[in-house]
Length: 440
Ligand SMILES: C[S@@+](CC[C@H](N)C(=O)[O-])C[C@H]1O[C@@H](n2cnc3c(N)ncnc32)[C@H](O)[C@@H]1O
View 1 (cartoon, rainbow, N blue to C red):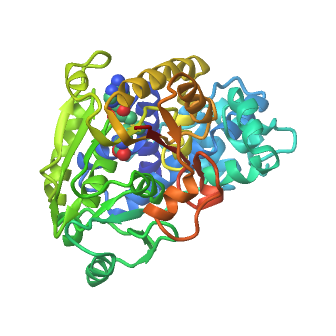
View 2 (spheres, protein in one colour):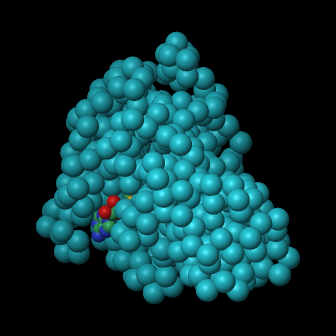
């Protein structure tokens, strides 16, 4: 594809992303499936530009607004601004990409040309930008993030605005970290062990994992190191009854199932529950590949679910990985930060508390309830945890450093009732986790 045709692909994908709710990586997958002629360097180039524009969006919009040109912050305007500000492309060179022929974007209008002219030569980040603009986060989260991080705010947010590595979890139902590493190396995929998770491998450089034998045979699954740690902290063991209450497509279920295996066979009972039929369906091929078909999938109907009532006080471990703002995963889904509104945060907090309450009824005396989010906001984390504990005296938080020593191993995190992970502090996506024990 020519540089102009790649740019047109970026325009189409961003326009689709902003008109619907599908994440950009899913849209890109569908886009490339329909365009088999696009080679791997086209894909990479298009994806890099897409993510770059989403990561620069607040600053691009600030400059577009400041340019004085009668142009709104449209996808085209952002692309022109990004070329001029971030890539330092001259207005003439920008115009040469927008030819309108051979799949290139339509020629620049006079206003767009003037926009390119007025921005060329300027820095992407300007001293006059308000902090949320310069650091690329929604201004309505400013009070919350400042209270959380204080003088670490810039370092934490900057780390969230970088590209994330690709981490793999070795599936111990089928392999060991050493075997999986060697198998991948034999297919020219180099990895290094992750610093915190004993089951993690991190890709060195870029690789297409999906086509490899190691992936197809279920030796590894793509999973951020932080997610791996959360699953380990559950302390699932062979013979237990374990419930992954918000299982989604099964990322953590697979890790829990592997922890319950003896000689490649799952011992005990493991349930993957969710209200979404589509997500539960997506789990099936992953279970198959991982050799974890013993996982029982359960669709829930929401509150007052009959299955939940019938299974009261039966589980040794209940993981509640609630729906959240996803602020901890901004490295992978930068568009998510611009989609959430304060009203949606209020709604989701109500849902989180309801889900936690329902899931708690499944824990047997002496069992554990693990509350987890991929959010960084205290409103979804500590505040939810303490609100729940206030009304549920039967539950008490375990010291997270001790749980870590028993389940993950290696140097423990700071003592306290909960764990926080973030790209700047642990090199993982952002996560929150607390392990509560139900008193006998
Ligand atoms: C953060 S995602 C889970 C991700 C998953 N644990 C993983 O590791 O891939 C939250 C999930 O909660 C599910 N959910 C939302 N409301 C629920 C409810 N009332 N009961 C159970 N699951 C619910 C959503 O469908 C979504 O799949």
